[in-house]
Image (cartoon, rainbow over all chains, first blue to last red; front, top):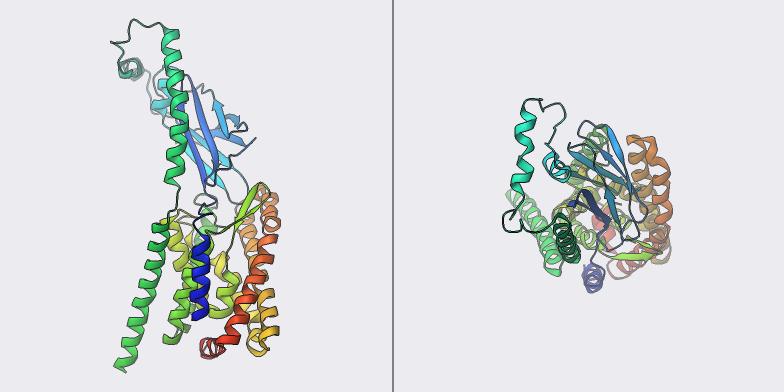
Length: 203
Length: 204
C-alpha cells in the first residue's frame, strides 16, 4: 500500500500546474447583425482553421464558417430559424451549440420562423417584437444608427476578454475539486469494504 | 481519450453500456474483501492521472494508467475505472454521463486484456522480468484503448476513420510513458509487497 500512497502523493504534487482538460469550449453569441462564435479546447488552445457546419433543427445544412487564428468565427444568418453549429475536431472531439430562432430573428430584424410552425397570419404581429425588446430605445433615441453600432461594437470588444475569462474560469479544476473527487472514491470504496466486512462477519 | 456526449450513434452507446455493465458485474463478483482497498486506491490514481497533461507539439495528451489498474486488479479494473470515470464526468466534465458505458469499456476493456495477456508473466517472473512484462502491458493497454476508441468512432460513421487513426499516433508518447510508469510501479510493488499480487490475483 505504501507504494500507492507514494504514487498518489507524487501525482497530487504534479497536478497544480497542468490541471486542464481536453474539453471542447464552443459558444456562439449575437454580434451586430451576424453570429459570432468561439471554438477551442479548455487548455487554452483555440481551434484554428476549423470548419464549422451550420444546420437548422431538421438537419438541413445552412452553411459553413471557418475559425481564424484566435478560434473566432463569424456566420451571417439568412434565415430566422434555430441555428445548430457543429464542429468535429476529430478524435472524438465534437462540439455543438445552438442559437434560438428568436435570437437569430432579432439579428435579422424579422419574425422568428420555427421550422414549419409559423403561419402567415401570425408573422406580422410577432414582427414588432424584436424592435420592442430593444433596450433603452427611448433614452438613446437621439443617437444615429451609426453611433449606436459603434457603441455596440465598443461594448462587444470590451466584453470579449471578460467572456473568455469566465469561460476559462468555468472550466477550471481547482485543487478542492480534485480532493473532493478522491474523497468520494475513498468513501465509496470504504462503504463497499464495510458492507463486504459485515457480510463476512455475519457468516 | 474520453469520448464526449453526442459523438457516437445510439447503438454504439447502448452496446458499450451493456458490455461495460457485464464487465462491472464480473469485476464486482471477483472483488473480495482483501481486494477492495487496492481497487479504491487505483480508482483514485486513475481519477487524478487524467489531469496530468503531457504536452506534445501543439496539443497535449493525458495519462490513463489503465494498464497499471489492469495488472493489479484484473477484472476488478472495471468497477475501479468506472467509478473514476463517473467522478471525472461529474467533477471535470470529461466525457459525459450518456457515454459512460462506452468509455468504461474502452478504458477498462484493454486493462483486462493486458492482464489476461501479461498478468501471468508479471506474477511468475522475478521483479525485474515482471516489471518488463508490466511495462509492455501498460503500453499495450494504452494502444488497445486508442484502437477501441477508433473502433467506436468508426462504428458510428466512416467519416471518423482518418481522425480515429490520429488518436493512435497522438498517444504513442503516452504509451512509452505509461509503459515505464507501470513497469516501475510493478517493480516496486513486487520488491516491497510481493504478496499484493498473490492476495489480489490468487483468489480470482
